Length: 89
Image (tube, rainbow, N blue to C red; front, top):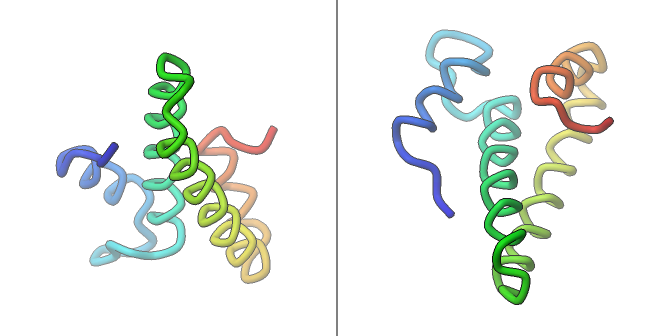
């Protein structure tokens, strides 16, 4: 469940930290969140797709590690990011 090039570009421009930013932690978390949402929708209709479920769990773990890193570096940025993405409660 890859993202289209257009959707990636939208996420980059929306979450970039500076003008030439394409891979900061914020952008990576936003892209992972978009992929997680798509995979979650897929798995609601395909309950027996265990390989996709495993991939989803790996993506969730990766996003969790990135969010943990952002929280250690700057708690305010972390709070703002999870509020913008609508995750964690």
